[in-house]
Image 1 (spheres, helix red, strand yellow):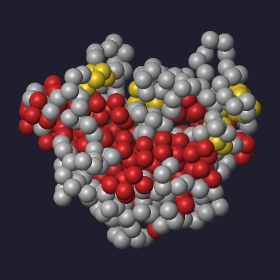
Image 2: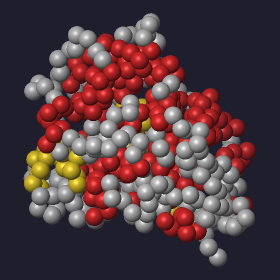
Image 3: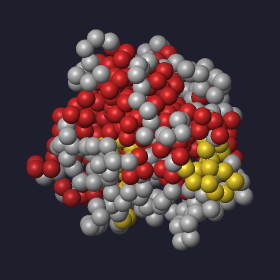
Length: 464
């Protein structure tokens, strides 16, 4: 019998979390179970933790949610010098429908969605004291994944045709077994997927606590992601409001220096949400992962683990910085596994560390830009100029005397380079990307061919 590729094998194993003093997510596969064996609150929470484990997979924030957008928007940012040709095809915008990268993003994403759906289906058996939090976390996972998927497989919301452009299938019920009459969903429109993302994140906000364990989402994690969603829609009022709520919560502060925001054993003071990498999810030169690709193979201090060094800094990147700006000097010279000399961002130089998904610095830039676009009295009472200068001051850059929308676009690049932001920012602001129009078909990933072969209700993106 055929199976949809996206179906997660919740039938094959349950995941349990092992307690650890460093609070890192350490998930272990256990014996085969069936859905009716998910009987206790602990069973449901273990399944939820399995969703977090997949979030740190290379098909999600462990690599491809950040590296693939950066390769699509590679100009002045990143050069692929590795031997994995499929990544080179992404940078060169010559992706084919059977490229394994869209497949890994799609299948891992729908695996997480199916876990979230299963948790929500079984929420009634969760202990009443934990139920709201578990519900909120599942909704956070689902909403976050749908936002990433619709951004990579669909046209940008900013092109004005979100109500007719195709996004990705919306699946809100768990798939326990394949049924050809039920398990062949069509692609929903971009606007419908965005509506689902907003609904999930808003409900997550209503259920999540104001703080949570190191690897788990809380109220402000959902607000921060929701601010991204609203920014990509051009809804500046709601974007500024969500970002302001995070900033003014007092739960987070910028690290004293820029380098301290990265390569930490646990979340830094400015991590609103981060994933905790392990040797299973980012093992070095033998697998995929953001540190694997950005960490050089040679040129590092003696004893430091090495990566493949397949992704190097493009020389144009350095033209964006003043000499005193720490961020422009935050790199390492090294050599790739194939012998290519180059420069590497120090953000991703140490294995098995926390990888920031959303940081407080982004919230300052979001609130500032949104308030600038709105005009009038700023939401939160802080001017756009003050917000951008808060970020610049921490980096050692000179204070701006005036600020324009283009300053925020460039400042996001300086602050958030190699974190997957450039693609999203250029698309929502309708700027060309690598010489292509912001909504060019070549900037959208193909629906994986294996998915189309199994589900004939799926329509392929133009150009594939």
